[in-house]
Length: 399
Length: 180
Image (cartoon, rainbow over all chains, first blue to last red; front, side):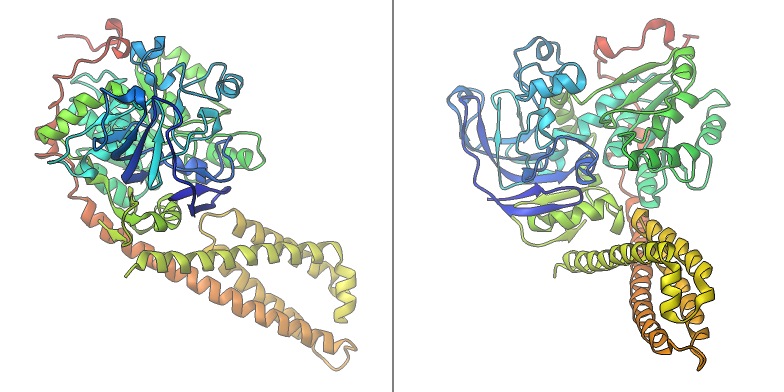
């Protein structure tokens, strides 16, 4: 089968590799009908996340048709089922899963010892996201083996909803939703969201749906800001105005109650001292992440406010104004998304027509065109916001 | 037609060329910096060693700029400017008193060839940026209508207030807004 494989920093190739097969009774094989490039895939593409190996299959946002199941999946899955696969693999049985904390499942990371060393304690296994999280083959492929498939799936209706309407239930939609839910939004709240990429866009819609009085979106890419505005946000272009000054202006000098970091470890701040400092330290490998957004959020957030961090961080961060966070009594909530905790509700909202997450798709290409699209997406060229890959397709199209 | 693939191919070639020029710049710069006297002798311009060293620093800075930058266009145009300076400096050594006149001619030919490459690369990068700007403007217009909602955002505000925030994600009562 064909799959997008990692061969080093900025080197993704569409390779021919062996088809996956059932390895465990809880496995299923899914024929991928649609998959997407996620913003967090770019951290692997750019070589900032440790733990990738030559030939690893990329991708953790995908859906398709169940074509084979292991014996333990009978009763929960059947051949022909249409499923979206959550990026977090979970067992459904451990203490964390029973609490709904699926992204920190205690059983699914088969490289637990490595993760224990890196993070103190292991988190869940993830698809296509380094050997620190299990080294599972990802979904930017024609077929995928889904481990713990009896739990790790979201069944979607066979008809009535297109792939693109439900595909993002596997990652960016619940990620944006959890980011907003973690803020426990009140009708009087101003929510500031850093980053208008795909997760940022979903976060904007989620905060509007959850009833925030004012939503402010921060980025420097004009078309992404236009999309944010269309979703109901007031926008700040950090290229042209001071984020801190503008946020204070929009909140009568008090700062936003809730701040959401939908950027993560590769912040591109323009000409700020700390961003230059981060870039230099990251280049000489003295720092793994560029945490400009975290610093700005801690500084500008209203005392007793909440910071929510769906943006992915990988390792060691420098010059974090923890004094500001501590003295202002900020609450910080973060983590990978507990996808299945939210998907029943979100699928219902899509079916009701409350939201159609396909609004974010700007590029549709074949798997073979995937490697080039990584660069297009990374460099935000050609108005690229979200790329959907169609493994069965040969023709490229722009939305 | 898969225009995306074709454009991506051309873009990668241009960026690979820029990358190559970046490394070439650093290699030439290091040579000028560490062996200025030998170079000056070879050119028959013995007094020009300090100038060659300064040019070496310029080459290294330009090369590093090309390699480190997300958009190397400005740095490659900088190389074109540097080429003009190199050509002018070399031309000043092209006189009958110089016993190494032939070496100067070789150097001039080489710099001229590199200048053409620099020019081609800088022009391709500039035209790519133009295309990006145009695509960005088009996208800005198109995405301004993509709300993803059934009704305008103002009408959708609070549509999910029926959602029960899980206990572990609720804001403690003391930190919630005051009820008036």
